[in-house]
Image (cartoon, rainbow, N blue to C red; front, side, top):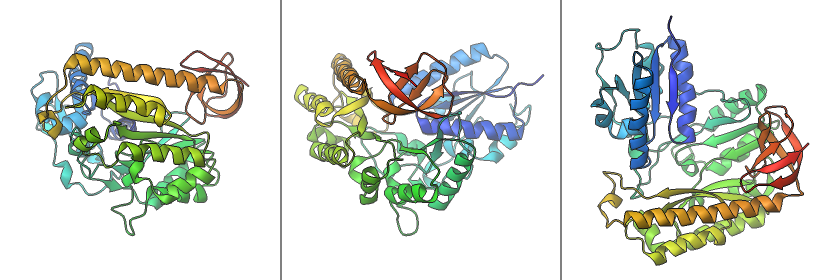
Length: 419
């Protein structure tokens, strides 16, 4: 008896989105008895974890065909080609093509090359395969892929290719379908979301897309946008922040650091004062706005003074949800050739950033006690506020629905709520 493919997803939300697309395509193609690993390449540690996961999956599934795809497969296919556990390596373009899966016959091993990874930089369009959401509560809509920037620490452009945008009309029609299926929240996702539109006629901006969706899909209750580059935020997006209550007051910012010299060495496009000014203006326009942020600890040449500037950014930008990345060199990036920081210092600085982030979360949660919030229920006894804080309930709630909850307490990680 054949079994449906088993998927393991590592890395970002876009990978999770694409895993669901692959799930649909493999089901349509009748692929069976396969384990498919969708990898991440954001750090060397991510690649190490992928190899570790592959070895474990092979031990647990000795007879299944093991297929590796995703960003790590795209950027370093040879790493996985030489693993005895791996049967096939697919690039990021190939994994999103229905014909890839349709051509995998039941006994494909031995009748195709082990590596199928084309030049991602030659890709000019986003994948044509759109899925109508996944999960039962929140739908993710990929509107952009790839990145035209070349930050010195980042390998992702070589895994995702140059920036490509999904036309606004296609996005709007998909969101209409999602709302028709009962989704109460959609999240716009991409690799470099604020570059959306630069390759489209007229070069529209992300704010134009957001305003168009909110206007043309009036019955969409809630919209979120995933990680953005604050220096690229346009006037219409700021207008949406100020005037559109259906745009949730939570922005995740790609800040990376808080010291000007380190930001320049990272080849970022903003300085610390730019980040602070953006956060102050967003808070002025939307007082309940909360921020998450990516911050790298221990970037090459980072001194204690440089790090203190990064640490102070947590307070100066009023950051709440931190994603802290201890720097690890990625072969092929300029930063890997820069003078490296001692590993013990990197670990200590990452720990200090995480502690600051934990304190910020506790302050945010404590300030919510006594308030009422509209909570999107993700599990019978858990949902999220408009600012993305988790709320736990003592009684079951209707999954996928938005309920009004009184916040009764917090434990440093979650809010407690009653309806």
